[in-house]
Length: 311
Ligand SMILES: C[S@@+](CC[C@H](N)C(=O)[O-])C[C@H]1O[C@@H](n2cnc3c(N)ncnc32)[C@H](O)[C@@H]1O
Image 1: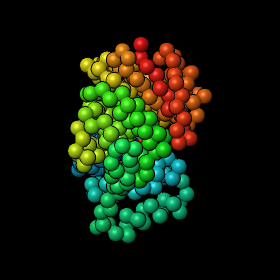
Image 2: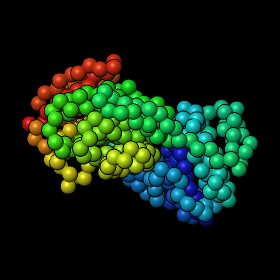
Image 3: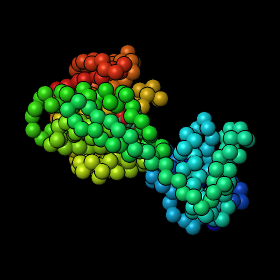
Image 4: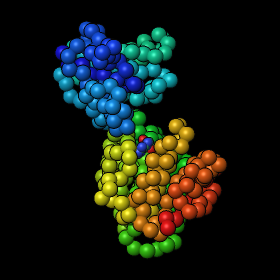
C-alpha cells in the first residue's frame, strides 16, 4: 500500500504509537511518503517523523494507492489548494482523502471546482511586469506557492532599485551577486537588467521559487545558478561574492533573517556589501549590527534598505 501525504503539516497525518510503532489506521499501512514544497519542511519531517519526505515543485509520480491532502483557507492560498488538488486528481490515486481545516461550505466549493470539469487542466502560472531605472521591462513568471505570485513585492523592488543604482555607480566589472530567498528571482534579474555582466547565484528553500527563478532565467536569457537550500550557499562559495541581497520573511521574528545574515557574512568577500530590506528597520537593524560593523539605512517606497560592508 503506497500512501502520499500532501499539504500543510501533512506529516502529522502519519501517527506513531507510544513505542514508535506506526498506528494501525488502515489507509496508512505500508509505504508512506510525505511531500513538501519547502526543503526546510523536508528536513524537519526527517528529524521529527522519521518518514520518507520528498521536496519538489510538483507531486511525485505514482501509482499511489492513497493520497491524503491537508488544506484550508487559513493555511494555504485558494489558488495553491486548487493547483495541488488538480495535481492529485491527475495522479488518479486509488483513494483520496481531504483533511480540510475550515468550513464545510468552503470544502465543498473546493471539491466542486475539480468535479465540475475533471478533464480541464488549469495553468496557474502568472506573468507580470517589473523594471528598475536603467533596465528594460522584464515579464516575470510565477506559480502559486512561489513568492511573489501574480504581482511584485514593493520591498523586493526597493531592494533591486538601491542595489542596481549603487552597482551601476560603482561601475566595476564582473561583480558577483548572491540573491538569497530569491523567490521568482525579482531582485537578481532586475539588477542584472542594469548591470549586464554581473554573475548571479540565487538560493531559496521553496521548490516553486527555484522552479520560477529557473523559468525566468531561461526567458530572460540571463545565466543564474539557482540553488534549493535552507541554510545558504555551499561552503565552496564562501568569500566569493561582492554583493548580497536578501528580502527575508519576518514571520518567525528574526530567526530566518539571521540565517540570511549568517550566509551574507560567510559568502561575501572582505569589502563586499550586504543589503537587506524590511518595512520598519527598528527590529532588524540591531540584528544586522551583530553581524556587520555598521548599518546604513536607505528609505525607499515605504521600506528600509539596510546596507552593510563586510570588514
Ligand atoms: C519575502 S520573500 C522574497 C522573495 C524575493 N526576493 C522578492 O523580493 O520578491 C522571502 C523568500 O525567502 C525564502 N526563504 C525562507 N526561508 C528561507 C531559507 N531558510 N533559505 C532560503 N530562502 C528562504 C522564501 O521561500 C521566499 O521565497
